[in-house]
Amino acid sequence: MNTIQIILNNGQYQLQVVTTVPTFTGVEGQLLLYISGTTRRLYFYDITNATWQFIEFNNSGRGQATVISTVQITAQTAAITTTTLFTPAAAGLFRVSVYMDTTTTGTGTLTCTIGFSDDASTRTTQPAGSVDLSGLNASTGITFIASGAVAITYATAIAGLAGSPKYSLRIILEQLA
Image (tube, rainbow, N blue to C red; front, top):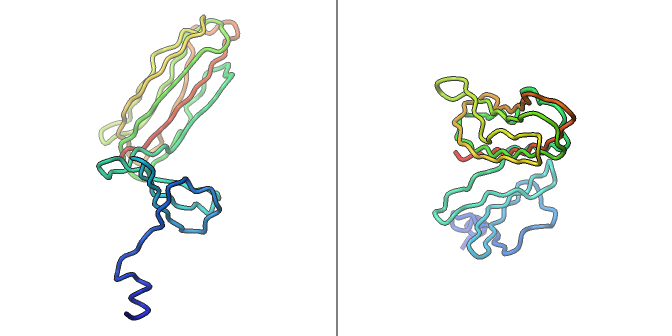
């Protein structure tokens, strides 16, 4: 067998298979296949952020949803104007999860709106129900959106604001396809 054939492994490239999550410093472009129980992940080393990133696969071999943006705001006392959550490079299907809760009571009703543009129109949706700020209340919700390559945004509004209520807002945006 000649050296080139050995190096190329007869035209097949093999990945190192590991059973523990990598914690060592990798090199740019390094790939690992992680297999532990039913969990299957393709790890790649992100030299820019000096971290291991991964894509997880389900039992059918398809990649699972990837978290692409998060928001975690606490002790918020006012509405949040329209803010970009993520701008996709291409059209796709996304899952948006929203959790809002009152941390200090006052008066008012809190809502969170997600904005996006699909192939037909600019749209908005409110994944979670409104939160009554007069008690230590919470609301959560999940919605699916199809968005083009334009900004996906979020905003909050408070109707009937009085007193000094505070709230927390958590949003997770995942790309499904």
